Structures are given as structure tokens and as C-alpha cells.
Image (cartoon, rainbow, N blue to C red; front, side, top):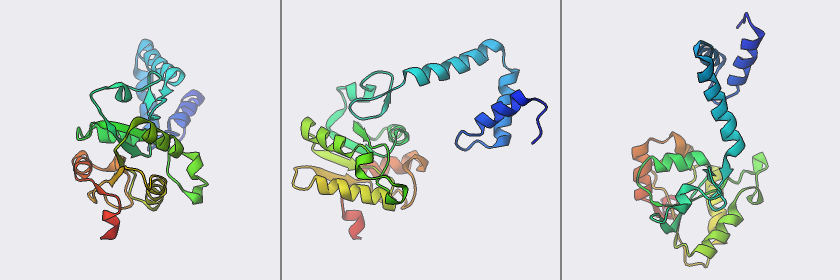
Length: 205
């Protein structure tokens, strides 16, 4: 694509680095910004800069937060003896949108993947074990994507929890193997949470 302006070309290049944004979509976004009043563009860039400078990671669950502890962890009406273990912040949002879960979360920040050089020490597994021991947790919901890497991570964590009075559950098979939670529709994901099963039941069938 040829551009009449190097300024436009550079901006399009930056936008096209965003996930799922190709050059044509990036160009449309840039043209939209160009057509906006200067104050609107400033509001847009100020919001991004402010977010980047001030966004925090929750000290308890590792979700993204405006404060040291996120609003979910601070909400005393949540079921505090249940922790839903997820891979990423996107999964927290996906589950929250179902309105079928009222416990706490723990964001691992990834899954064990030897092929990508990600081991147990590279994600927040030990922090999870520490929380479970310190907070009197009785159920851990393994809401990881049903992939080989996700299953490996669940197996590893379950071994660490062996011998503890912890009920380990996983999502029902409403979520197809190999898919990501964030791409599962709200109804299916919500039903999978409500119909969660003891760890191992899905795998024994």
C-alpha cells in the first residue's frame, strides 16, 4: 500500500502491530483519527498514556488493577474459599461476563510449555499454592484452556495439592479441546463453570 505521507505510514505501521489488525484496518483507524478534532485525539492518546503509566498488577490474584489490590479481591461479597485459576487476564473478563461465578481468581500469566521454554517457575504457580495455604481455600477451579499445555499445567498443580483437603475441579467438556476460553461464547462458558466436574472425570471418559 502506497502512502502520500510518511507520518501516516508510520502510524499505520504502529496500529498494524496490534493483534488482529491488518494494514487495511490500521489505515481505516488512522483515517478516522485524522478526521477527529485535535482535542478528541488528545483524549485518546492521554487515556493510553495514563493507562500505561498507572495500571498495576493485583498483589493477590495478578489481575490488572487500578490499585494495589483489584476490585474483585477487595469485594467481600465474593466467595473467598473458591479460587478460579486462569491463564490470562482475558480469561477473567470472559468468565466475569457469564455472571455465573462469584469466587476469586488467580492469573497464572501463562501455562507450562516446554516447547516455548515456559516452566513452572516462569508462571504464578507457587504464588497460587501459597494463597491456598494462607486463605483457607476449599475449591480450586482449573479454568485453563483445554490444550495439551493447559492439561499439563493442571496436572502439575494437582500434584502439588495432593494430600491437601482441596476440591479440584475443571470445566465441563462444553469447552472444546484445543480452544481458548476467551473465544468460547458466554452461554457455553457459563454452563461449563456451573457444571464443573472433579479433576480427572473428563479425562477418564
